Length: 267
Image (cartoon, rainbow, N blue to C red; front, side, top):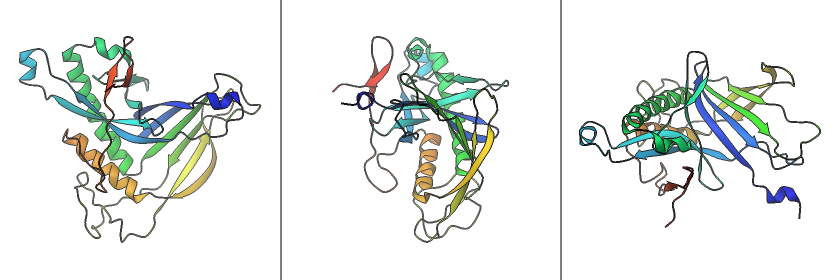
C-alpha cells in the first residue's frame, strides 16, 4: 500500500481581517510528494461558547452563550479554524474562548473568557459583513512533513474582485433578514452571477506576493444565503436547529482531553 494513503490530509485555518478584506489563511499539510490535491475541503461553522459562570456576580451580568465564526473540516466535521485579532502591527493573535482550539483556553479566568468571547463575536460579525460584500481573500500555505515534490507548490493568495451583493430590491421572498443596508436577491429568479479572482503567488526567497493570473467562477448564491443566516445566528447568539433549506443542522459536541486539546465528546 502506498504510504501516502496512510497519511490523512489535514489543515488549519486563521480567520481575520486584513486590508479591509475578510481573510482566511490555510496551512495545508500535504500527504506526500505525489499529492496534488491542494484545496482543503472546508466550510464555515459556528462555535457555541456556552458556560455557566461560577461567580454569582458574573452570572447576573454576563450572557451564558456567545457564538463565533469558525471553519471546519468537512471530512470529520471537526473545527480547524477560528477568529484571530490583528493588532496595529499586523500581527495575529488567537482569541481565547471557552471552546478555543488553544489548550490554554482551559486556564483562562471567567473575566478573560467574557472579554475574549465578546471580542470574537464582534470580529466574526465584521468578518461576515465584509465577506457578504465580496471583500474576500483566501491564502494557502503548503506543508510537507515527509517527502517533498521536486517542484513545491508556491504559497497563494486569492483576492475576490467583484462585489456581487448590492442594495437592489428583493426579487421574490426570503426567510430571514440580511445585515443592515443589504437586501437579498432570490435564488429562484436571479440569473447566474460570476466573481473574478486574482491569484498572487510568493516565489522562493521572496517576502511579497506577486500577481499570477485571474480566474472567474459562478457565485454559489445558496451559499451566500446560508452565510447571511450564520450572520443572524451569531448576531443574536442563537443557534438555528435547521439550515436554510429546512434540513436539521449538524452539531458536534466536544470536550478537552488531559492535554487540553479539543476532541469529539464521547457518548
